[in-house]
Length: 238
Image (cartoon, rainbow, N blue to C red; front, side, top):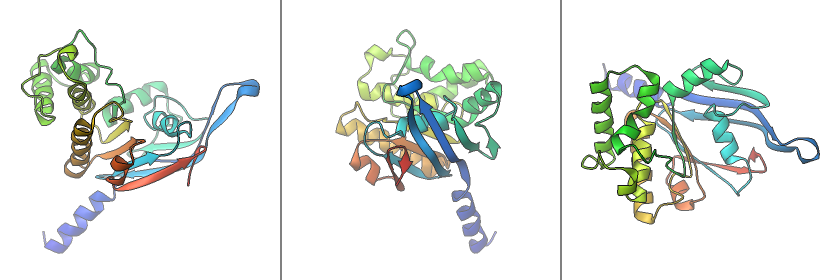
């Protein structure tokens, strides 16, 4: 392959749209308390790109992330993941897409306290059921090594620091090799050192693995280091 063709091929891969949505509306509550949270929102996420969604509390950032992650349904609009429209898909189809294509990282790690680090990381693969026990454990161990916890695979969450627990949660989100990572304030409860470790790992994933990463953050330093910043206010992008 010539250098020109190879460069064109790489550029094409980088521009591949992994996730997109258009015209998303979401209402919460009922009666006089009904609130129009999202006002026809549209966004795209490219392979290898890290996007930050920023804005004041209550503007709809987390609501949008939950819709994109198929944890909730919009009241209107479309969501496309790897070429498949999923906003109106059946619950079974949405669950399958969520398990195979999407990795979640939340502000709180939500690790199961009675399970070791490696057992927590293996949980998504157990649910998907595609890997044998040995391959599952080996993959989980490699992921923990990648986040700097290769020597702590058998520790319980209570035996890990807050930053280490969040890194376990990131490893867990990668267990099924998703094409999309959605992170809701992933560094919100961490000190500066651990915030940088978590962010740098997510950025490396986007660049090296070609994953589309969308994170919600209130941290301007984190947002400024992303490939792009999407400003949200009152349920719409500015």
